[in-house]
Image (cartoon, rainbow, N blue to C red; front, side):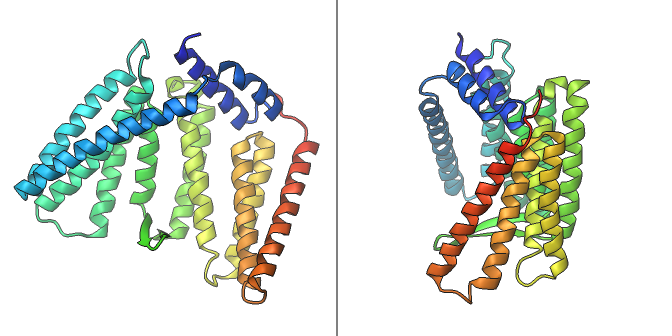
Length: 328
């Protein structure tokens, strides 16, 4: 069997399991039949090779730009590299023989990241100031370019980048704070929650209607909308419960987690169930931390947290075994 055929069958089997169409035992039976031996090592080596080539190229461009002391020169160089990556990436990803689809998608995604860097350098070269709204606009412009590329050539990787840029553009930020600390922030959690909810609805509509009709070649796009929507909806609601926020948001966050579990059971969709269980557990742990961290010793606190986590996991697994199996 050709490696491409094995890859397609492996992705389909994993997708069936994630959608709840097949159970875990059937997944473990089917997957070894088609999974390529040494798949993880081969993928790791491929990623490392691409990363090394890309970083060496950027190092050369950075050296040239530093010697020229011009952001405009750096923008021209980066745009040339990005254009070349986009051209060859599209050709490889859309090749009728599908010899290098994965590498092509990675190159297209890297070219879109280079497009964002080019826009930033052009802004600096034009004497623009470092204002937050400018970066947001550039993120949204790059996201629109990535979405157009995804739909034009039916590639999922650019759409993933487009969604990431979109949510960052509307106010989701993260940064490394030093000393092993990371910071995450959402500028307006209420607005982000509403936007994420709309993206969830869009994902369901895209997956259940459009992908079975006019956009059948865009299979998997709806799943990306759905996953990003669920992630940012839950993060927004979680942030609204931190640092002494009103009890109303705690109840809304808890209700949203329970609603996702129920929706997953009704729709037979493991994605809703998974996000609901994970963020409901995060909610319970957060409340436990807020009320008992200062009242108990560290050892007793973590002991009780571990016991409660084991009980919660046991109840969820027992509930899963007692629930009727989904019918494909």
